[in-house]
Image 1 (cartoon, rainbow over the protein chains, first blue to last red):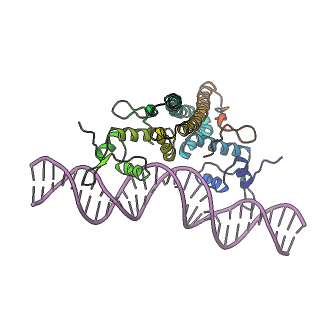
Image 2 (spheres, helix red, strand yellow):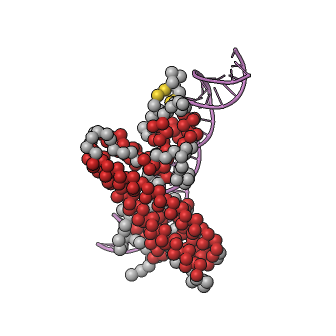
Image 3 (cartoon, rainbow over the protein chains, first blue to last red):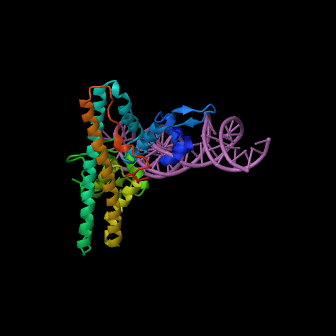
Length: 145
Length: 145
DNA sequence: CTTGACTCGGTACTATGGTACAGGGTGTAG
DNA sequence: CTACACCCTGTACCATAGTACCGAGTCAAG
């Protein structure tokens, strides 16, 4: 069975808009494997995976710019191995920091729910404290994008 | 020392642009505690915390719309307690899902780094497989925002 | 060989989250 | 009273990430 999806087939399979696929191409995120003589784009399994990767990484909060970096970790692997590792490590640290902060939020939300359930008075639910730290003390959020 | 920051003082303390503070006001995310007769905005500790919360939540990938919801969990607490709990639970599930996906990415990045370090051959680093799943099999990323 | 679905490139428009600027008023130090 | 920093409202502009629309070409079925 053919590798050789048209743009519409690819878009449907991955669940994105056709325009979005073309948009990614403009941004050099996803290039068709080939073109028909008519100019129709053709995509293979590699491209389908790549597009899935983009959408999934995006769902985790990566920007398209960052995703381009992540993707380049795959491609450039033969060339400068150390560079690849370094970039992966940086990304890893970023992701881990984000996870930690989100876990703090998870705890806060859980405690919010728990306390709300028990306190019958109008004392009010506890605020999402873990996210209220302000610069005066310590700020674990340096990621000023 | 006065509670009673001007917009510029608030912005500087939290580390945001003055325009951004006003922008949040337009979006009903942050209202000044008071106004001077001259019309100057005045902010107290509550507002400073609220602004920090906004910026921190944002760094975790929440949209301003979502943050408004999170903030309303605090404010509306006296009114309809069940509703607050329900919304907190929904938000909690969202956050937990996000955490899980990010942990998957963490593992993938870690393994990428590890394998790169060991493989001397040009076989190439493993791709960030955990993010390449496409709809055919199982897709842990339903968060199609 | 016509019809309808699909594709092409190009341009324009949308939403989100800001940021900048213009033209004026305020506040205070000297 | 003059400077100068700060604030006011309002409008315009920017980047990111798409989405929509256009007129024209392509492809497959009947």
